Image (cartoon, rainbow, N blue to C red; front, side, top):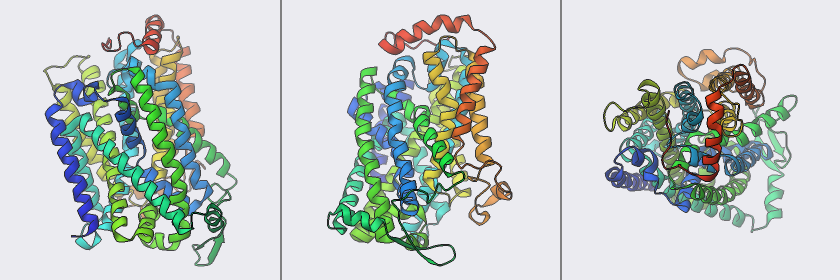
Length: 534
């Protein structure tokens, strides 16, 4: 049995054991959706980091830096700075004002049914975008590692999808949390080891390292040999639209994190707001260290492995694992690949449980059945069925877009979250006049504008038809109508504008009256253990 397969199976066995243990404890809605609110600050901080440091971070950003140098590193900067928004703006109020989902905060002072319906739709959309990226990374990684055993891309994607469904359906949030904790510790350990190996290759000399980065050799599309300084900007974000695309990307990453459903639900697993703040600090330390080290992963792959070899062996998403193979041999390659596999499984589990929780709690219970379960345990049953459906959709879409860079796909999910979710969260918490119509218009305008702009941008219409399978090919037969790859610079203001216009066209006395209650509760935590539904 190969080293890769052995390490993969070891992780699967351990996580399935965790799922079995968690399944025995996940009785009732609070246990299934929020791990009984018994997760400590450091545990939740590591789990948040594990949820956040996805395949896009480990595989995608390393690939972007390896192929685009300084411009690729801008993704790392955006993801790192983004957590300041979470720490300073949303972590504590969300924990105090909500129960299981983002929509709980909106429904506290607004009319529950319309805002929950729109919030559920937004959550499912963002989670699906994000999940496609993880599944694409999983398929590429597993199929390359196990190609000798007859496992192709589709089989790998289906296998990962089945595993994530098992975690969520049987183990709920408790299993997901511990899978994320284990994965985060493995990822940090693997990244530190790989970074040290890169520096050892250059004699632990930063000047030698950056000298090599300033003279990267590769062959362009015409076959001509090129020597490029990867420390200079402009390889990816070129005029005339490059600077605007970079600004758009930065807006999406920095503002989108505070609207990501799978990140927000993590704050409901801790006992109080103070613990939520502690968990964010723990997460920022781990996330900060990790994103600094992506510099060594990406530039190391560019200088030691080379673009030509990476292109011939799985493409940009395989930059970090191939670097591990070049520096540490097949055993270390297997370990890093197993870490990437663990990363993917942990994140897709988090995405799946956030999507299924939102549908079951927000849409099924509170929209369709007016906040009442028809029978005990129904909400959990619906969430489990939803996990199957979400998993099937993610598998199908990942197979369709199997060659797209995973960090790039996730950036689009951030744009949708920043455009639809963040405006209504901020206005609900901090604008007294904000109304139900404002929330619905804000969610709808942000969601529709971001998806529409993505559909007519180079992100979709600029793809090579040979890299896309199935019915999606008809989307890319025309020149892009929107010039930027990331829609954030336009869709985020549209989301805020929709929320403002919806609010100004109608006053809502009850929403204004309850604003004071929400403010007190969000800042003090009074009554946080008994969320009000109306």
